[in-house]
Length: 441
Image: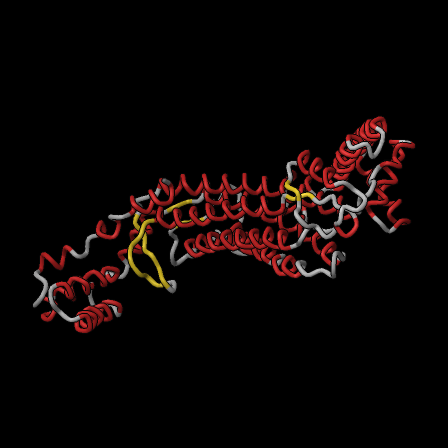
């Protein structure tokens, strides 16, 4: 995480202050449940919460000071949860002996990570909504703006710019559905004690903490929450990043000098190059391509975290301390940047039409071929006749329509007015409404 590619709300989720606040809430809820079960005096649970509230207020007022105090204790204990509990006990007093009864550090750490991941998912879901709203608006704006569809980066057949954007909207709609499922998958609570057997803590404590935090109970935690849940979460972020790069790459291609069908907004005073004053570079979408690589890079470590020794080891811990913040902060920034690119993107319909027309009607070759087969010519002969004229047009030896009209073999099957009618743009756009209904409802 670096400030250049970070947004404050997502960064705050991974800040020590938020982590310690969640740790306290877990401990306090557990104490409340244990007091209700008679495991500790109710007065002790009250004192723990009141002392913890004072601790959290102090942390909020002077975060750097108190984070350093906890870190200083950890430098001695070599254990982060114990360091926190020691610091917390200074605010609680003698009743602090009841804190963490029957619990293990993973109960706190894994449940906290679940809360942080759901918090991060909620921000990412809002980001997706913002991006999808921008894509829908621009897709409707250019629903019937003809442009050339390309396969292998070569002119294929006509489509519309709106259909292009609708396709990307649909991809992010799928991304949202996957993220909702991944959020539900990681939103589990484990308060089961050493090796997850509840030997020293009642399962009802776990149920109480889960309810208070808005989480589900982990069926079998083995002291840690199974990491296949986390792997799916980060894999989902990786797929979303792939969709970010897919759209960013499309915009980069459309901005190429030879294409110039759409481009990033170039603001007054913006400079494209330190050497060449004429440059208008697609710097935002190039940046998004790079950020997507960072998010995707966390997927393999997350998958490797699934395998742990027996009931628990901490080989996953160092990985998650890095990839949790890095992946979510980076993707949060990327989605918001991409939404801005789409909202402000400059579109050139006239240039799209010029590119459509640049090959002299070659993009209608399939329709001519199909019409010949419908009139009785074999597919092999019709393909050969159309390709023969298409290649001449490609070489610049006349428009495709003119060459077809002069081809005696083609004229055997198609009258002049029939041939001319095959070069109608509307033919290719007749089902755009159907596509939009499928995407947008």
